[in-house]
Length: 287
Image 1 (cartoon, rainbow, N blue to C red):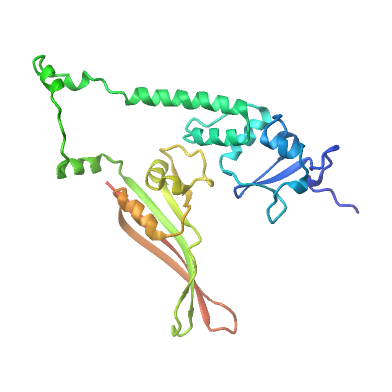
Image 2 (tube, rainbow, N blue to C red; image 1 turned 180 degrees about the vertical axis):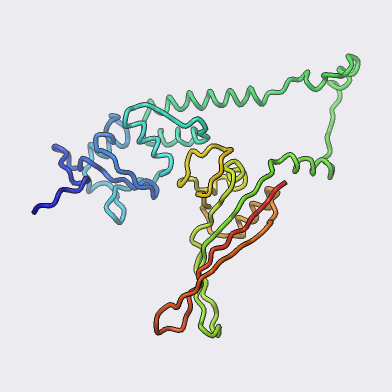
């Protein structure tokens, strides 16, 4: 009995590409139709999948076509190419970066729409940041206004003012966790062989996590999370716990508690080495 063709081997007319194409964009896997990738004439993807052959394009180890771009933001590029309509979440702070991706993929209409949204957002921010010069004089007498306006006042930080600044920061909790393992001899005679920390996870309020870790925070597992919501799916782009602790300390956090659990198993039935696996969490607090 003949087996059905896989989705990526469906015939696609005279095109050397299959009707359904698998992409690896910065480590994120996407599956889409060939006609979606060629929906915008003269774009980079149109040129890749119309004028070139599959052998001319780079692939990953599993045969997917590889693009060394931001895998998280590519979802919005692909979504735009499906119906040529730009739809973004209400809270989306990555418009400037998405505009850069649109410029790379040569999607001129998407660039135009994003530039309008970015300019509008910037103008709103500028209006919110402008201060009323008369606001500082409200409640003062008319004779006081000229003297205050003509003088130059220098504010020297004092210990009390710095503490007020710290108190003004939003309080909250952030939990940092990691899963590690190491191998040690049965009688603890040999040195322990530690393995590299695979991933450092971050749990807490979205706004606090972004404030502390910034660009080192990987949001690909929980994108578009509003700033006041909580998440347990973020992780860091580096693997050094001390670096995470430094960032938390710089942001005014201090460690509140620590918890760890572990299990043990022999490396082999006849070997003497034990493999210990552990999961550790550190709870940090500010305020």
